[in-house]
Amino acid sequence: MSLLALQTELADELETIRASGRWRELRAAQSPPTVTFVREDRTWLNFSSNDYLGLATHPRLIAAAQTATAAWGVGATASRLICGTLTLHSALETALVDFKVGGQPGYRALLFNSGYHANLALLATLAGAGDVIFSDALNHASLIDGCRLSRATVVVYRHNDVDDLRAKLAEHPRARRKLIVTEAVFSMDGDVAPLDELLALAEAFGAWVVLDEAHATGVLGPHGRGLAATVASADHPLITMGTLSKALGSFGAFVVAPEVVIELLTNRARPFIFTTALPPAPVAAALEAVCLLQESDQLVRMLRANIVEMATALGLPPTWPTPIFPVVLGSEQAVMYAMQTLQDAGFYVVGIRPPTVPPGASRLRLTVTAAHTEAQIGAVAKAIRAICRPPA
Ligand SMILES: *Cc1c(COP(=O)(O)O)cnc(C)c1O
Image: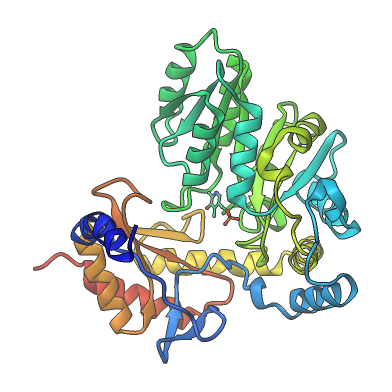
C-alpha cells in the first residue's frame, strides 16, 4: 500500500473526528507542568494536573530517584518473574501494605507498570466467562477495558446508585463469581463511591468489591491512605488498586489485596507477567512519597484547605470531597469555547469530551493541588464564573 493510499483510507475517519468537535492533539510543555509552567512560549497557571500534593517535583523524591539510579542503573532489565525484581520493588510493596491497610496480616501488594495495566490485570484475572462484573456507569476506561478483557458478563449499574446495584445483583443469583467494580473518587466528576453500602451489598450477595483508588490515594483518608482506610468494616476482604502517578508524584501502580489475590495475579496476570519491571527511579521516588506521607499529613491538610478554597470560590458547598471540580457545560463546542477563553487569559484548564464522558456531558475539569495559592484559586474561579454566568 502506498502512503497516498494509507492517507486516503484514514482521511474519512479523521474528518469524522474533526467534524464532531472531538479532535485531540499533543502539545509539549517546555518546563515541568507544576502550578505554573511554560508551553508554546507562554506561562500558564495550571488547573489540570493530578499531582495533587506537588510531589512530582519534590526535592526528596528527586533525590531518591537520583540515588536509586546511581546505585541500580536506569532499567530493571527484565520482567519481575525473570530477574527484574529488585529489593526496591519489595520494599515499596511492603510500604504500600503498611500505608493502605496498616500492615494488616494476610494482605500483600503487587506493583504494576501503570494503573491501566493494574486494572486490566485485576479484572481479567479475577473474572472470566460465567462470572458477572457489576460496573459503575462512570468507571474509568481502564476498568471498562478490564471488563472486556475478562470475558465476564458485564452489568452496568447507575452511577453511585446502590438501589440499582441491589436490583441488578438480585437478577444474577447463579453467577459463579460476582465482582462489584468502582472508582473510589470518580476521575471526571470528583464525587466519592458509597463504599460502606457497596461492602454491605457485597456481603449480602456474596460478591467482592474491587476499588480503584487512583484519585483517592494521597487525597482521602488519614494521611491520604485512601477511601478504604475510612471504612469501619475490617471483615470484608478489600481488593484495591491505586496509581503511583497521581498524588504520589511518580509512575507505576499497585494492587493491595489478600495474599491469595496477589499470588493469583503473580501467576496469571498477563499485564504483570509479560512486561519489563518498573525501573529503579520511579520505584524509589514512590517509596519516598509513601514515607513522606506516613511521617506527616501536612501536604494532605494543605490540599484539603485548597479544596475548601476552590469549592467556596466556585459557589459549591465547602464540604466538596475531592480536588476534582467538574464544570459541566453540555456540548463539545461550549466546552471548547470556554476552554479557549480561559486559555486566552492564561489559565490552563482542559475540556473533557466524549468518549471520556458521556455525550452531552462535556465539561471543564479543574483540579486543585496543595501547591496552589489562595490568589490563584480565586482568579480562576472568577474567570469561570464570568464564562458560565447565564446571559442576563
Ligand atoms: C489515571 C487512572 C487510571 C490509570 O492509571 P495510570 O497509572 O495513569 O495508568 C486508572 N483508574 C483511574 C480511575 C484513573 O483515573
